[in-house]
Image (cartoon, rainbow, N blue to C red):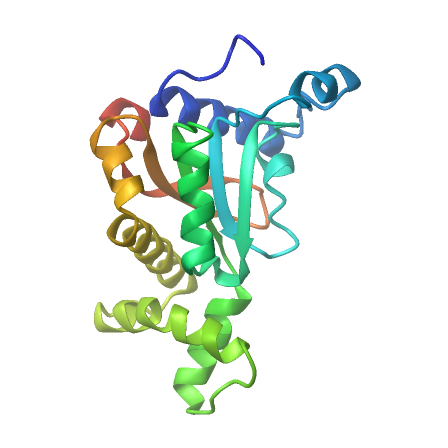
Length: 211
């Protein structure tokens, strides 16, 4: 593995944001994407971040954060809704692979959030397993409504915060890692038009890193 791996959550977060800045500026370096990296990571992986993002086709994590093979442990669901298999995957990333950072990645114009808002407004339930998806997003939309939030960006941010809360509340493994200073959990909101990712909430970062 490379010798420049982040040694703590703050370093991991700064490395991730630096990659996003390159992507936004149109100057990606495409690190760790060659044959040498493929050979290096074949025996084992040591990602510096667990990326739990929405399944939206425009949220390709390695691209928008300018990373390569072995850098990110990616888990995705529509609307970044978290069930047991998602929690298990994230716990594997932090407790077995020792990733010092967990990222919840949401974005504007999220279809899962829009579908939930429509279902609540119309009173028409979705069919199949999409209904389960909407039920998992509903608490975020209702919380935003109770807080008087109506703008898309504000509702998306509320859903990101809610997902971070769910991870911390339901996973004792993750909560213990954060309490011990081994891992941080952050929520980022991605803007489709300019490619930027902004911090919405964090657990376990220092104030300097989160500023």
